Length: 201
Image 1 (cartoon, rainbow, N blue to C red):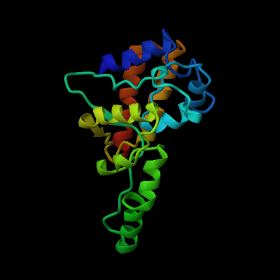
Image 2: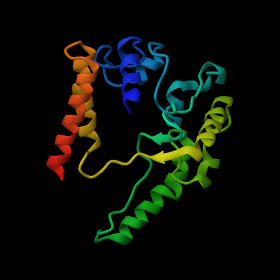
Image 3: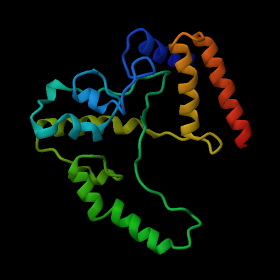
Image 4: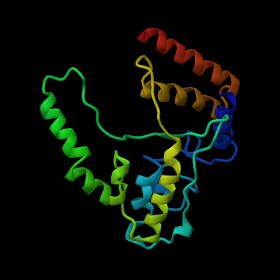
């Protein structure tokens, strides 16, 4: 785990390879990618319509790479929304299921898949994804290569994702700006996360 954090830190501080407190993005890094100001974008299939506006970009101009591998097990983590769930204690189960079915299985799901702005929740619906242009065919093929390694990130109930990101940003910003060294920042991060867990448990 140390090596993973150190890799990110070095890429940010030494190589300026992603937006960070030293090289902040005004909102998110999508527009920076469109403007040719960043070379690597950590996004997936849904980002296709943004970088291929107008359908004129040849596939060889952009490429999709698999996620970096740390350790012996190759995984492809989902970092964004993938669908909806129904609360087991809901009092309106029939209505909730009706909406879920419509949105995830029926017309709305098909329309969303056809738009190319995201992957459907079911592999059987991949056939609806755009494949007419070489670019769309290419990006769908890359997704299909990654499916065997797909996992869903899970966070324990006592450690919210937003709290984790906030702690990470707070400690790494101090290190990137030279206020503390990297090892001290990492120790502070561990202490801060442990404190959050202790309060929530």
